[in-house]
Image 1 (cartoon, rainbow, N blue to C red):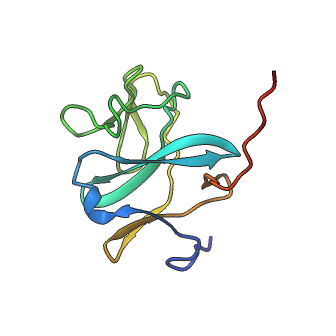
Image 2 (spheres, rainbow, N blue to C red):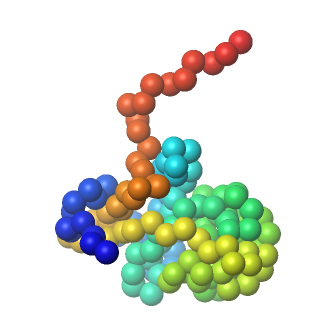
Length: 137
């Protein structure tokens, strides 16, 4: 499998200093298969990790406060709705009602003091220039 060269297709996400170790995540809007959704990036064990903000158990956003995904011990990503727990290093379900529903990873890279994310076939940037659909009466 080939990966794009560093920087190719990269979307700037945030300044690397905005992500403190096991701290508040950076949340941003994306499109998954053309549907709006949020994603989040956090620093865990020195590395930036990113996932779609959608629980594997129920397709709902997981943060219990804006940008807050980790449990009280800052060990697991925890869904605020049903308590499903995920391994921050790889998004694997480790407990609760998520069963085999792992988190969907978003490729990220930290370089030159910045964090970048990479769109994929299924996960694309939210277009700000897209026409707004007309409402129907």
